[in-house]
Length: 259
Image (tube, rainbow, N blue to C red; front, side, top):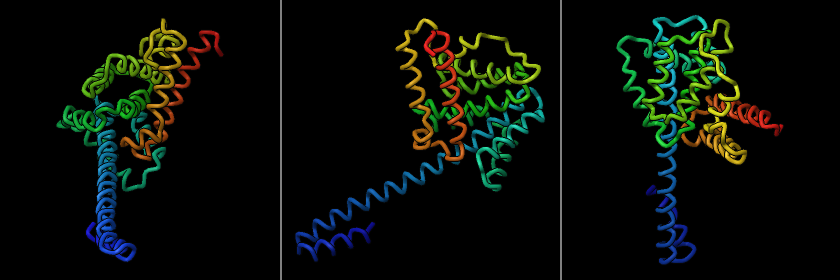
């Protein structure tokens, strides 16, 4: 920063004498502060993204282990996710290690949830992305074990999710589990679940439904989430969530004769 101030002062002196030197030095001090602040912000964001990734896979391990074992399908989802995220091999190794850490009997799940809650405070969409990854893991084998369901609800409430968000998670969980053979989750109307994904009731007006849809699409835009701590490698997960929101909206529009 001192170098920037000196350069500013020299340039100012050459351009406007002593007064120019003072002005140039002041500009150099201001610019240096902005650059230093930007660098610190960048480093802070990188550390936040690293912690988010580590916690994501650690909690995934705990959720998959909730029923007493990790199925082959759940491990396959883990490996597929690592490929989808286009992670380098060293980062994949760290993700696998975090997954195993979460499976351990002495894993501090509540402490990990508290860490994620701090990372996602004021970032509800980022919190939903985190939960989306957990959903994809436990829905992998098409069988939703009560212990897995209970664990996921524990995670969601520990993150401070509202009852509306809990309903959204339940709706997505039903949708994910229903894709596999042997699904045991209680059936529910796809249309009813679509309303829950958007966080509105079936009595909401068309304008209210559209407003809820636009709000969710804005909050879940991958670029916006990236600026709030979502790792670039998880962009595809964010995009998948926007597709799900869009599908729910279209299902409602069709039911109302609008499409």
